Length: 271
Image (cartoon, rainbow, N blue to C red; front, side, top):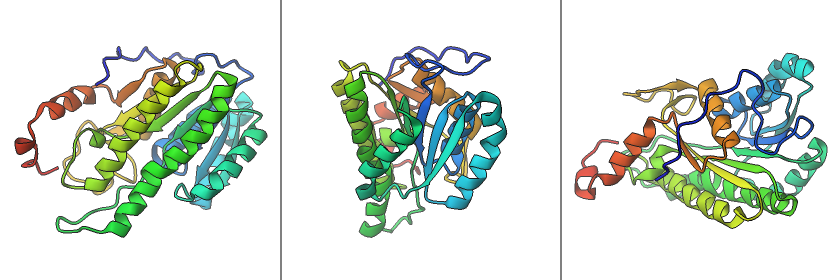
């Protein structure tokens, strides 16, 4: 469990990640067509970053780039769109190399891709489970490994993985989604430990309920925040080199309590 201090207040000007100068603002966001990923691209572009925005849906990427154009003109930022299915691991190395070349380097990477299909109470579907793992975990590892190898040789950079509070316990509502996020947490922690002597920081983000396509139609949502607010908190955590951040922070108390609930009681919960 993280015991990081509360995030510092966001400055009124552009957010600057540690060690990143004005001429060194280059980022890749995977899972950028909607939700937190799109909000991160909008914020980074507004701060003068050159951002590569990746997702499966080209129309949404085109609309995002168009929406960011005025801000980019004002700040000197840019949005480079690339159609990519996070489950397509084979294309990651070449795509990573191309994007880094087009950006002129890489300072910040965010893996925001994720799927959470509805699972019936009596549904046990291995093919569907593997699709969840392919996007939520395998894609994160493929991109994370490329970033780690690149950044460690330059001894700088920040890697952000968007996980979920759902990864803290094995919830019966969607077993493999929880599994994918728990495994992602462990991978990010291990990557952070491995890169600790290279000047590269790895930040794990555990959002609660965020107003995105993934949460649409879900009942009994509380503490719901906008994707824009989540993006602000995510970048603040990355800037402050926080190891693990619940978004918003009050979910950390929920995560602490949930971890203390005995299994014989937790299994009775409806989540």
